[in-house]
Length: 173
Image (cartoon, rainbow, N blue to C red; front, side, top):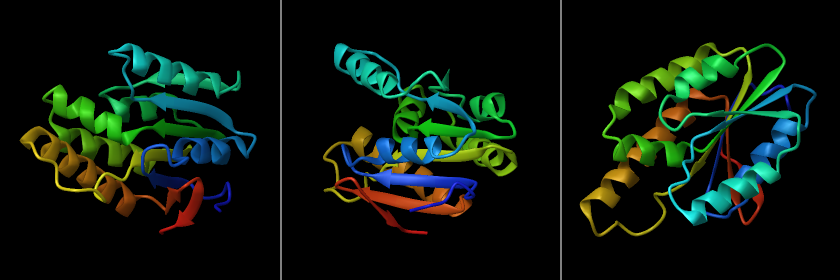
């Protein structure tokens, strides 16, 4: 388990592993101002329901910033002393970058720079997508590679990395 003094952390895990819940618990453990930076977009009914469930899990202490593409700008906007920024999630962000034909490298560099100068405590959530089989199509392989690159670069830049397995956090870094 981490303490609230760790300024930057990446929480990895598989789908439905408890990573978002764990990161939210860490954020809520202190008395800081809470800012949720949402990267998801509701393009269908299932995603709309998923977003609603996540919103219902957060109480009125939370402010939400939506950042499907410009994550660095959202971190700068929500930044402040005595603040926790919870970014959920980098994997959806990777998908948004890829499908929007954005310059992923430029956005990733901007994200890392924003994390590096933020005064807030920054918690980032991402799926670990590299543990499965090699996808059978080019777009899925491109997505897996981009998500893996983002995870590696963010993990190298943050103070701590935890991975959740079946709801249990494991310290990686």
